[in-house]
Amino acid sequence: MKTEHNVDVVVVGGGPGGSTIAALVARAGHRVMVLERERFPRHQLGESLLPATIHFICELLGVKAEVEAAGFMRKHGGYFLWGRSPRPWSFEFGATPALTGPNAYAYQVRRAEFDKILLDNARRLGVDVREEHSVRQVVKEDGRVVGVEFTDADGRPGLVRARYVVDASGNTSKLHGAVGERVYSKYFQNVALYGYYEGGKRLAEPHAGSIYCAAFAEGWFWYIPLSPTMTSVGAVVDRKYADMLRQAPEDAMQQFIAHCPSIADMLAPARRVTEGIYGQLRVRKDWSYCNTKFWGPGLILLGDAACFIDPVFSSGVHLATYGALLAARSINTCLAGQLDEARCFEEFELRYRREYGNFYQFLLSFYDMHQDEQSYFWKARDVLRSEEGANEAFVRLVSGVSTNREPVFCRSDQVFAAKSEIWSERDKFIEQWRAHKHEEDKQPMLQEMLVGFADKVSEVLFPPDARARTLNVFQSGPENSRQLFDGGLVPSDDELHWCAPA
Ligand code: FAD
Image 1 (cartoon, rainbow, N blue to C red):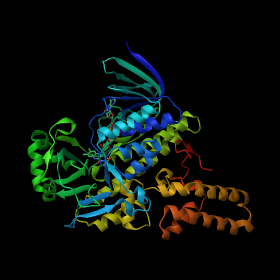
Image 2 (spheres, rainbow, N blue to C red):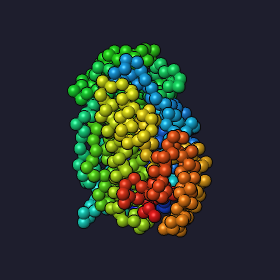
Image 3 (spheres, rainbow, N blue to C red):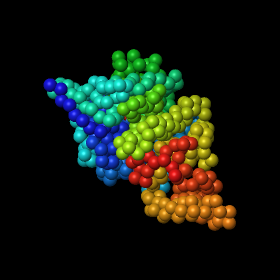
Image 4 (cartoon, rainbow, N blue to C red):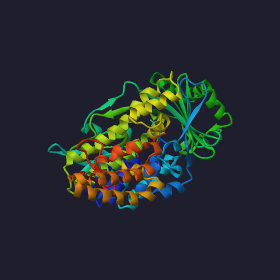
């Protein structure tokens, strides 16, 4: 007999995207169910994270302390043998003022453990998490998705009815076609062959925990330290090698390593792990794609179900969890009956596409191997349309904090401390501005208040030379400054909803 459930939101997939949205919707008081095909901990690829995920999303979810205590390797930046320069070059997250000292790192995570922390957290927040439940299809009524059909661990069929269905089922999603079409990039069509090694060498500090990416004739390698002794090593190569990788993965891996002297040197003292969840060489197609729509009536796509971009800058978990935050705001606002559905989901889609687009645009240039690191940095500045130093723009982009107008990414410890002061100055200014905006003799006083406020914000968020930019951003009133698009919405103070700007 078919079991039937009724909830506000059903989430398909309990990876980082699914567990993040489930937790943030449950925190707003709604009934949420997650249906996850596997039993956690399960293996997953995508181990190198960005500071935006650790310091802002994990903080908002309430798991930052747990992640800090899990013993993952600290990642202070990236180390590259890439482009025209024959010598390696590197970057550190601390190069952008968007991440102050204590926040200038991320982690290299063992995904089985990291994903379980996030899923258990959703459960703790009241989400009904059902593992070994596989979703087969969506249920549609009158053109709207109203639920999903699933099969449970014992093979019994079930139905969940919900106001919203979230597809966070990753790159193998069967549901994304219900809102649009998956369009594959012409440029990024690679395959990856990867495995795990014990005893590989470490880079010198401060890069012992950094991701190392090394280009070679057939493609590039990632070298990600997952513990003091274990390393995730993957070769990303053109799709013309796909058959070779599947037919003889051991031979292919050895051949690629031999063709990349720096990786061969790092792995010289290492042996490949051959047991447990890290014991296989695995192949993953990593073709980049993006759905033509991220939402339709009743159905929202997130993470790899919505879009994926080449892994060289480790943006997958960041895009999945940032997308989850944006979609959670839209769902929470609609469930509370506060704003029109189309307006809320357009805000989600525009912001999400913008972040995906930043990485996509930048990566198009990054694969031009005839450039040097300075050209890559300048390209990042172009993509962000920013006036900051090129190195800073690059680091901001690849840290996942490319938008200063997204308050959740302005929460370094230093900003937290100054935030209440900033907002009280802002409120004073708004009050005065509303009361006196049409009085000519009060304009100098308003201008002075605005400059004082902008100075305060500059001190915290931007380097000293950026005062003019800050003034620009805040000139039309602080609330509008958090708008990304004309007519767009702004995040609420609790980060969990959208509001119409004043
Ligand atoms: P997933 O993590 O894939 O989770 C989806 C979940 O849905 C899974 O648990 C799955 O079991 C479940 N599911 C699937 N189908 C169903 C169903 N029918 N019913 C119920 N449940 C279902 N990202 C990084 O951040 N850093 C990296 O270093 C990185 N390296 C990468 C290297 C390569 C070669 C590739 C291909 C990707 C890499 N990524 C990386 C990307 C990263 O793996 C993904 O972007 C990230 O895991 C997406 O999270 P998600 O929550 O959308 O999906």
